[in-house]
Structures are given as C-alpha cells and as structure tokens.
Length: 254
Image 1 (cartoon, helix red, strand yellow):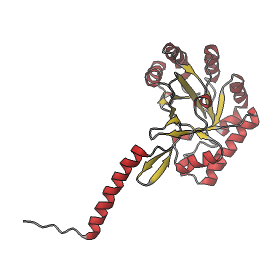
Image 2 (spheres, one colour):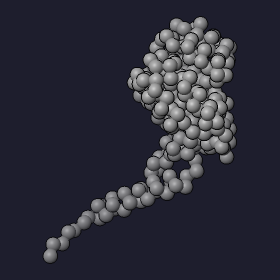
Image 3 (cartoon, helix red, strand yellow):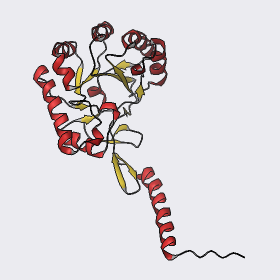
Image 4 (cartoon, helix red, strand yellow):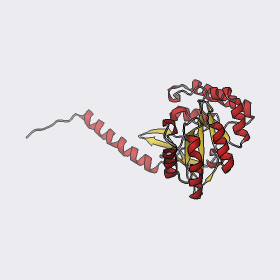
C-alpha cells in the first residue's frame, strides 16, 4: 500500500481553491449587481443590449476612417425614417466637421469613440480622461450638444475605463450584434448576420466606412421592419437610471 502524505499547507490551499470556485458560482448566480463577479473581484460591464418587451433595435456606426459611404447611409435612413447613433473618433470629427453637422441635421445621435482610437485598457486614469474629455469637447464644439455615450475602440475595456467614463457622465456602449462589415463581408452576408441575430433591445455594430454596409442597409431595415421592429437611437433605447447590468451585458430596469 502506498501512503501519500499531504502537508497542512497544501490542504489549506486546496480548501481555499474550493471555496473560491464555490464563491464564484454563488456570486454569478445571486449577485444581482451591475457587475460580473469573479471570485471576490467585481468586473464592470458596458451595455451590450437592453432588456425590453418592445420590438426596438438600435443600429450604430463607428467613424474613424473616411466618409466614402456616409452620404448613402444617411440617404437610406432618411428614406426609411430610421434614426441611429454614430460614434466618432476625435481626429475624424475634426477632419470631417461637415459630416458631423450633416449627421446631426439628419436627426442622428453622436457619441465619442475616443480621441486617438487606442487600446484603452492599457491606459491609466489620466490618459483615459484625456481621451474622453478631448473627444467629447470636439463633438460638442461642432454640434452644441452634450455627449453622453461612449464606445471603446476595438470593444476593449476594463474596470478603470468603465468607472472613469461613468465619472465623466458617459454610458459605455458595446453591442450584441456585430455585422462584421469591417471584414468586408458581402452585402448579403452582412444582411443575413444582422437579421438572424437581432432581437428586442439589440444594439447593432456597423462602420460608416464598411465596404458593403450601405449596400446591405436597405435590406436589413426592410427585413427587420417586416418582423415588426422599429429603430431608435441608443440614447432612446437604454435606461438612464434605476437599472442593473447582468453578467451577459444586458441592461435591465429595476
């Protein structure tokens, strides 16, 4: 018979590990907070989608590189009476101020997409504040409207980013439907992805410079309208107070 002697230190380590795993599952199941809890650590989350019984969807466009298809996008949405949200990087905002004005004149909402489009989880608080304050001010100087929404470049975030944005009065917005237009998918492929995955409270990610986005948009709008959906800006979709965010990123009203 082989006898294995386990040290007291190892036994303690095993017990702590089991407690940590147990704590993880209990926290995720019962937390009921706006944060995902991993062990004893709370993780802040942006809004990926909104819990609603109404058939409402928000479409959004990230603006960082060019304007080749923007007029077509605006024309399509004007024809279909669809309002959306554009997230703009500061250098795009400054270079294309005429389009910033045009987007607002068409009734669309504008949020910041940062100043320089960095991986913001690698920045300290001071750098994050600079990115958000500067980019928001650039938009406000052109539009005269306060910026309330922020989308992180690359969808890259951490607790510090979410907390800093909140302290600056910004809602951090992610998405639950990625059109993958940035991969230059065909119009039919983009349409199929969006129509298949969109549901009540969805936030859809597009890019104003997507090669086939403008081509796909009319079909997407028509098919979703046929399903009974209406289109609103993200600012109209989200809850501003008395809410929590579930571990899957869904914002729900309390």
